[in-house]
Length: 477
Image 1 (cartoon, helix red, strand yellow):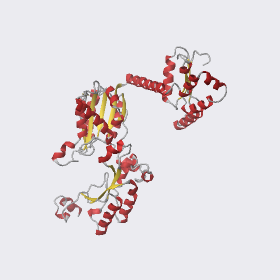
Image 2: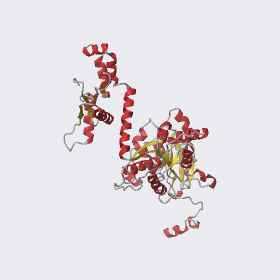
Image 3: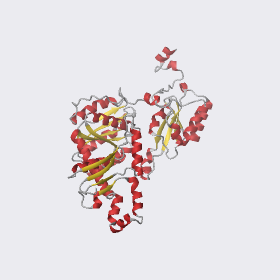
Image 4: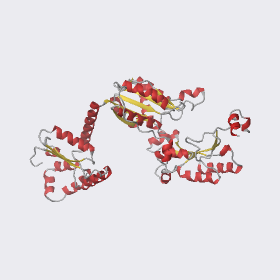
């Protein structure tokens, strides 16, 4: 650095990948000798990545190994030196403010001191970061197939699960893929994308999920104005729904409505469909996977990677049985989640577990938008389904259920086709008291939801007279 004709930098492999990338790019472009000092506290093959990460963070944060870049090709001294160690910038500013020989430098060249501390200013740093990211993406795009952006809208996590599955399968075929929820991806950025896949589930009466609602609104508004938002967009849509969720013929159009609407709207806004709309139906033999297996090959063919041989085995899908085995007998972190008063919801990882306890997490759709505009989380509450053997209860148990609904729910309870009681509007702090009260009435909720309990009520008094179950009844007795 004293000679002034060499590029010099200090990096830490496990501290800032972006800084390492910027350094290597600058060093490669510099017309002259480049010296890059890299910190990697690695002593033997037994060193774990976690320990290396901890040691690196300690060294960088304490100032033992400062991160910086010295590029003499810059026009001024202030631009030449970049301090990248965030943890020691505040200490440096305090040091510069002291009355010593460096304070004299601050007095004579205040702009130099300011640039040293701010590291070229936040705007310039951000621009460099974006440039480095773009260069890295361009490098990957040159090596792989066409880049693919995957956007999902999901309330219960099913669409997100399929989106993540698609990302994994795309990378196995050499396609650079990114994944985000629809509402987290701006419309302006979407206009610049070329290949985009949309995966959406169905909420309410054919409504889009919460984290895709703003995107749907923006598309509808643009279509109403007659705008052509997209000139380069090539898209495909996969929708998830349940064709039996709305049994009335007049409600059949709600099935997979968000996916169907999105597919038409994107074409209307100027997008080019590269693979036909895919529809996953819960009622198919393999659930939504039946439709997914038909749709996915069409996408690979459109992207020109249908002939790519995938040799690496895909990760085994996580099933309900895997979740149960890993949950410590259905405990998970439910107890800890109930103590968390900062939110009315439970952790997503516990969402499936609570179903095995007869509990579904819900929120009030009618006030979703209002609460979102206020910066509030959805109005979460829970549905509790009781497990009742044979659908039979005593008069006292009926009275107990009525009391539970008044004390812990919304004052009502339902008699369902699954031969049991069902409570709604139970907020998180009332979950535990509700379950305790149900248990006190000599009933429980285990396996009332999820993948176990699927009884159907029989309106006839004697099962032996019902044509529906006469045959299995005879076999049993």
